[in-house]
Length: 169
Image (cartoon, rainbow, N blue to C red; front, side):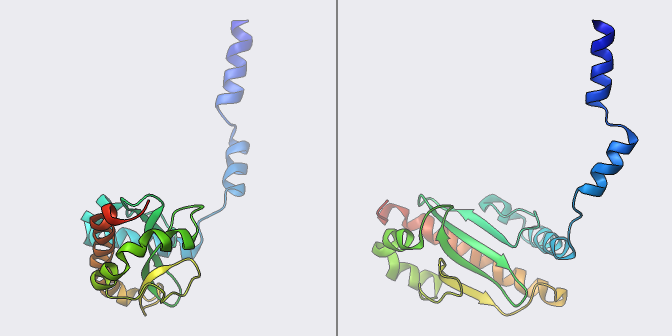
C-alpha cells in the first residue's frame, strides 16, 4: 500500500516534462497591452508609493477600484487607448442610480472638492468623471499622467471618506 501511494504521489504531484510543456502552451501569454498596463501601474506606484495604501496595485488591468468608507461606492482610475482618468461608481452589483442616491446629500460638496460635475461621464455607470487626454501607449506622457492621476486619486478617496458620515447608507 505504501509503494502504491508513493507511485500515486509521484504521478499526481509532479507533472512530466510533456505535461509541463502542454501547460505552458495552453496557458495564455500576456498580451502586449496587458504588459504595457502592468508597466504603467508599476511606474505609478514607484513614483507615488503611498497610492498602495488606498488600493492601487500593479496588476495589469485597465481599471483600479479604490474602496471608500461609503459602502458600495468606489473610486475608479483607468488607462485606455485614448485617455486616462478617474471616476466614482458603484462596487460590483451596485447600480449607478443607487450610488447617485447615496451621494445626493453631499453632491454640492463633492462638486466643490472634485471640481467636476457629477454627470460628465463617458460610461453610463460613472459619476464625477475626469480624464487626461494622453493615451496609454504613449509612454512619453506617463509621468504627466502619473503627476495628474496620483493627487486626483487621493483627493477623490479623501473627499468621499471625509463625507461618509453625511451620506445615506
